[in-house]
Length: 526
Image (cartoon, rainbow, N blue to C red):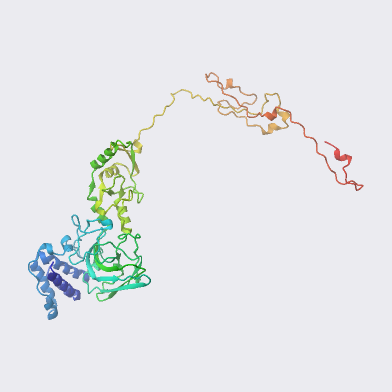
């Protein structure tokens, strides 16, 4: 769109912003547009009709323009300002935003359609080709687009933030909705936002970078946003969305944006842009359009297995996302990654929405948005395994199997009816019977009270009440050698007679004659 045409439409937009609801409804009714909705809806319908008809149907564009002018008769200043635009306008010179998307607006009109591919833009690490990255013709090229937003319109001028090495400084921006018609879309379309951008250069494209100590207030309210990002890494934070803090429905209300910063050693540049945001679902849908074929994955596995310097063995493939630790739903990875392990596209996009680094969470290589693709090999494994399976084994030839399909190790089992011989059978005999050395239980001064229970371990016989079982009678008819019997009730101190302890002397106390020496009765024994 030429500068004259752009100025003409801008002038019409300023007139539309001053019209009443009844006047806007008259314009919509005269040109077949819906007349329902609030004032902002009516304004957007008329503006969209102007953009759409400017190149495709110039006669209809002039008709809408004349209707707008006739709504305000006698306004000579406006009439002189709106000179007729040139009649020849090519389709390619239109605003690229309206050229890339279908007509949209309130009242049942369609939402913007995603472009067929990737276009100009940029991102963290210098990646290019992001979704909907085409810019409007009247915007600059100061900041890079990312997959999460597309810059459309610049609001106001570029503001310089001088160096403040020891003090604080504030930059205040004032704006009214009536002065910038594009702000009306921020109030009516949930995907259109007004964002604050900041960088260290006045030329671009460049990454987002805020001073390390900075804050933003809109109409006196603090805006909660991570302005720092990763240290010394521009592009690791997003621009600040201030749309919820603005009062856009009041056309003449002066909104104040205050940016405060301190302790800087270089200049920063601040700007406001109207941006089109892209949801995680849109980004995941775009990733699903690119595939890593199953055949190429198997070919890579076989190539590594045939390497003479590498011993080929089976490997385990986890079906859990390393970010969310849940089963994969949309398995993707970077095209430059050399591993088979995938991460879930939804979880990865949520992580990048919080802090964009665009690195693979497995190998930590750069994984830009345009390099992400769905792994068909892993996707097939997910489709053919139940939800309870979280790991499979991959053979060097590319075939995979679950744990339940692993071959059982060969284990030798004894034949039916055969007896398992145990050469270490032990029998514990009770000490309630006579000892083999001929000493009776009564000779040990009641030691039978502490006797071992009458029980035989590892023997099939029942407890014997009168005599010991000999090893030969425990398993009669067996060819097994007799079990060795260890009598745990015997000890080396029991073989000898326990000597009697000498009686202790008794001291009865002092004698009646006052002499303190033991009497003869003290030596009595018992």
